[in-house]
Length: 457
Image 1 (tube, rainbow, N blue to C red):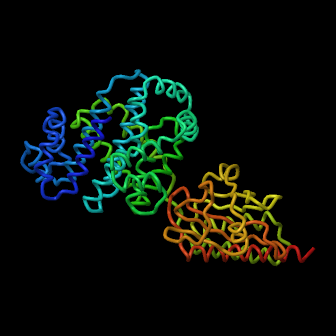
Image 2 (image 1 turned 60 degrees about the vertical axis):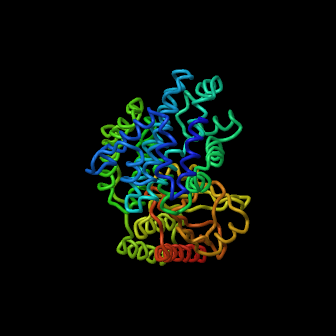
Image 3 (image 1 turned 90 degrees about the vertical axis):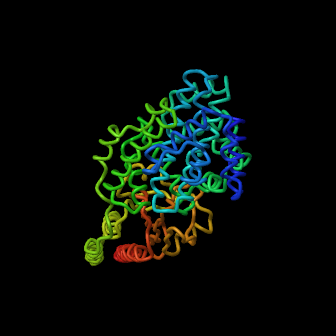
């Protein structure tokens, strides 16, 4: 690890020296024959060498492919060799390290693929940031000795990612993410890696891509993960690239194949059995749900018509709620929606009725605890949040999706008793002001029905 850190610092210093970096690059690692050989093999691979003549020196490779590309190949090669060739650990810990490295390498390739429409400099920077996203955990398994064996035993029977994170945090006294941040800061690994670690929900394309690429790679590597969660990650990545699901899946398959070939070029064949297998993903992709529902004006008008007809009689509370939520779900094109009612102590919003994707899970776990001022705002006016719009409240527990959500007060006899809620959590799509307007229209008509119902008693 010290040798890896030293080389990365050297490369980062060279990156800031436009005059001498090309020549010094070769001399700085020429003493490491194995590393030089691997870097040249990768530089001449089909992925990087697009039909040009073979390069035989690092300086020539940097001239042909660009310094950023060669620097990242050097970092990747050194990371893989530093960790793969360290056998001072138990077999179980070594296998855990291999799985983590394979996941990191796959996420780096996914990141680069998903940023294909951006400039090469950003692609390379994001590739390394994604590759090093779990550097702290990799370092721990590599050098922690008996402590690594002890934590490995504690994690052996756990298949829940959140539970594993908590066990690791309790054992270490800090998270692996914090450990990665410390190494990134000490080694000078760049602002993008630090930003992706500290603010993973930031909406810039590169940070969002790094986050989703790591989540998708983790999902593809976890045999115990429910198919629905893998499908959700696939949908989110496709939505970020603004691609139809089928086209994203095709690009994903090509990326998986390219990752295997590049693993061989890096001499890291031990990782191959831990990389996601295209065949094992095929069933999950084929069973992926239909494309997310778009806003349907006809369904919206039909929902409003039914609520209007209901208002002419003595409407039932639950009947109004179900009609309103169905109109929101189909008419606005949401993935899920719910009615959340105030708790008896008026400090939380708890789900009463839920519709759409993972409705049962939402009914059990979607409890919003908001600061008093934010809670008052939710109960008094329609609210919408979407990327770039910060007026709506943010919950402390991360239940509200960063892609956006919609809220509108639920009122009975001019008193707010809860909210109507909707979002596109499953597909990762954002919402708009126009959709908030439609959502609010349905909520207002539902509130009118409640008023008429109580007047008739």
